[in-house]
Image 1 (cartoon, rainbow, N blue to C red):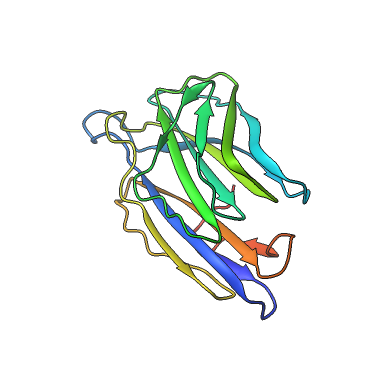
Image 2 (cartoon, rainbow, N blue to C red):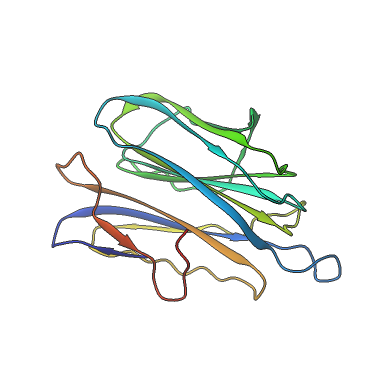
Amino acid sequence: LSLLLSIILLIILILGLIITPPSPQVQAAAAFDIASSATSTSGSDITSISWTHDPVDATEGAVVVILSLKVAVTGLSVTYGGAAMTEVTGSPITNTVQVRAFYKTNSSAAAATVSASWTESIKGAVGGAVSFTGVDQTTPVGTLVSTTGTATSASVNATAGASDITVDGLACNKVGAETGCGDVTAGGGQTER
């Protein structure tokens, strides 16, 4: 991802997550189903965010949720349709911003509420959910990679197989600002959803 901003000091955290399809003998590659999101940047203190995600197809389905939080939080809990989601091992936690990734396999093709809550009151959060079909139900996610830095652009290299899908997330925090971090543009070869 590229973050297009004036020369502004940014604290950036980015992660990449690999979605793994079943072995080729079982089924075709994993495929995108649908995406949904919610944003809360009103400037008021919040301790949760929720939205509806409505998958179209759930054949060997999985839902991935990426949360971008303006500050570090504790006690983070994420559910999908009331069921706890599994946090991806290695989700980076910094003192300034967080990108956290969660997943749930065996999802259904019915609308469900994605709900995330945490202990501290914070000024902003963004959540996104993406559902996929044709996902390996035993080992649905691969290795998570992440990086942090202070710059006006961000990138991370994630190694994926030919039939894997890479999902990424970005959190940034303008030093001394309460609002977002400007326009974010997907890099070459990426599809923004």
